[in-house]
Amino acid sequence: MIRLGVLISGSGSNLQAIIDAIQAGTLDAKIVLVISSKSDAYGLIRAYEAGIPTMSLTPEAYRDPLQADIIIAQALQSAGADYVAMAGYMRMIHHPILEAFPRRVINIHPALLPSFKGAHGIIDAYEAGVKVTGVTIHFVNAEYDEGPIIAQRAVIVEETDTLERLEEKIHAIEHELYPHVLQLIASGLVTIDTEGKVHIG
Image 1 (cartoon, one colour):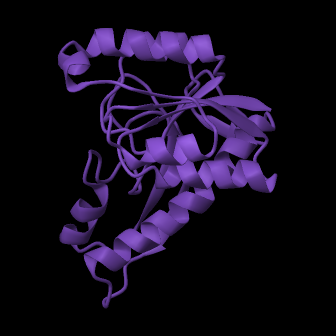
Image 2 (image 1 turned 45 degrees about the horizontal axis):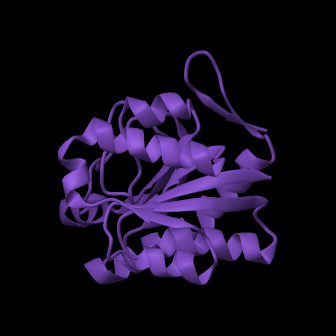
């Protein structure tokens, strides 16, 4: 079993997918703490209803991003987290968290990295008119959306897809892929070699 700290900023749909997988017995993990960058994030309600401890930071706390990350890292360590899963966390994390959890911070991104980095991956892909986009799960490093890729899954963009429909398709894949990858990690099947490449199996 792995003990997860989950970082969120909004609705927490990926958090819910992780909770559901744990409750279904398909993910051998326990969420020990959910931390939100917004005190009104609906994901905090999801965590509360699942009996998971929560914490939120105020906008003032982020005036010094490094100090905010020190607070987060200490809270995650105190909760006993083994890994940190970013699930719609809309802030970049820095060395206090990365050093506290080396190669143990994971992020999910709604595009096929290295394409469409940043906070608007779905919209950017849709507006670019690509025929294929998808979902990426990767380890986090000091560069935004550039850490070693663990898994990707493609999503075909149909001619009839609206932006809203594409978002639904992306989120559906996210909710399947994230718990699956976390289970691979829990099973000890994910490693990183000296060149920073991820191997599964």
